[in-house]
Length: 174
Image (cartoon, rainbow, N blue to C red; front, top):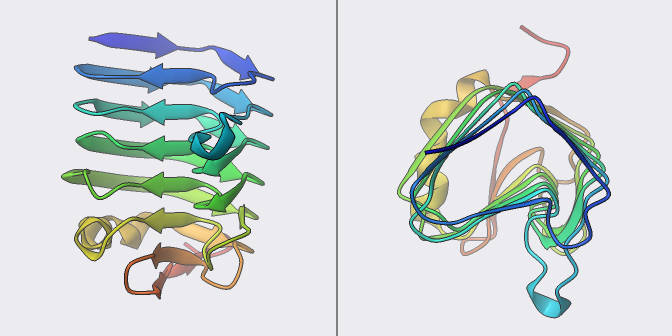
């Protein structure tokens, strides 16, 4: 198990952290102004999660990160748990805050905020899901997710269906 606790990652030029296989936990970290530009394959400005990975992220902040997919996080792993975290002013072609691929089999979001994230090619700056099956994994967790100013779709954008499910709460509520 790989654990990162209490670090600041700033200005990385090809993803701040790349996680593959096994279980990983990130706690109390700040990711600011990181980017991934690997040509057409730039994924996850702050964190890129590769195949067979199970990742938990708690009490972390993502601000000003950029990439082609997943300005802050691009998830291609098995499972992802996000708790008590903030995604603010991240930028990508798709999934300004978070991109989730169709390989993902389990997602849990609790008390996560998405504010002013931008996606330039798709409608959602907050979260972009690669398939309807992946997007449906998010539905149970959306009750505690809040968002504001995340573009045309202030919620989860399903690329395959060109559809959006808006966040139930805005940042000022609850």
